[in-house]
Length: 417
Length: 144
Image (cartoon, rainbow over all chains, first blue to last red; front, side):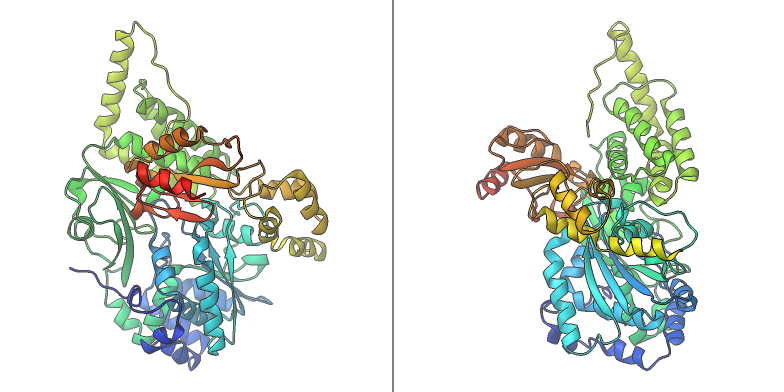
């Protein structure tokens, strides 16, 4: 199965600085159609299509909209989450720089559906260079009279991975520390400034005009039982052709990393970023879908020369840096885990390390406040499951090395990554 | 929610952009700057500090005129981000967290900067540089 470009259909086909080129390709036809529909009908269409959140969590987008539509509030907000901070993910950057109008049209339709009059694009600071392009695109859409029902403001982040988490993101817009909130209430009931709020990923919103144009049945004919449509993937690591690829949901990992990205030596693949699963090469025939593995669509390939423990250590170091610090399991759990993994990476493992890691990971998975801490355990537990030999070998080698050195430990350096 | 807390919340709206503006281009948020923001927005200084210190790009400690951020997340690490950091260290004589004597550069390591297909990568201020090599790094630094 080759690439199937729906979300990316306009990327490199239009001039992102010129709305005329977008209109020439049928742009804003979907918005026009949506204007003739009742909000409830728009929501129903999206719900029926089976569109799910593309940021990683995979919640039914139409269901989320329905909650916001039914919720009562003086104002309702729409937020496009463009705080693409997940390790190995760069697809939204590609989409935003190639087709800003598609996103604005998707947002305009979402605004009609839930009755939002104010919207934000929360753009990560690292993508500052896209700021002018987005603002200019919004201005052009306004000038052409397509954005009469809602204002869109680009809000720039200030460097915090956790702000990709929806409640932390809202805190950030409100001028607070970007810490996660306790849930419930969920954003569709009480979100930004306690008003009903919908937060959708860039890619999720990009699908909306296509669904309105072609119908829910067209969309739900693609993909698997629980994962409809296509998914945009970011592939990096040990591959010949790193980049952004769009495939129908349910396509195999092999199709993506071998056939498209050109990987020829695979030891392991991490799917979903720093909190994503790490799987051995033999699992390469797995379908990419919510039912198996997907996340944000970040794929990092590791070749046979790579140290799995070091890769997990790198992930955990990142999560430890980015943990907001509000809840103890995540704040302290990541800290203790990098201590143990840091020792293992440097050949200073000890009996009981694997059990301690499993214990910590399982505690974090059930006791953390938000997705960061809950999912931080995933790559660690996966690596212990699929690459247990590497851990036991490392510990045995460490024990041998200590006996060789007459019981002395090797010096473990701080801050290694 | 009472009327008062609602009002308090509203004064905080847009604090991030205001802090960014106050900091100016690549300057850090000194106590003086934070005090000004606090007074202008009717917020206690400790609240302003609490928010500033949370975000990586609202620096509360002084930084160089140009801030170099070398990505060391997994995709860049696989492409030897360590060597990039070592080479920048060698060229500038500073380690991450330090500022050069002439205050022209400061060096930091970053989480994922979203340039995994161009790894190894770094940012200088808000400009991205990918597919780094020793020659490229030396040439880039000369342009500042």
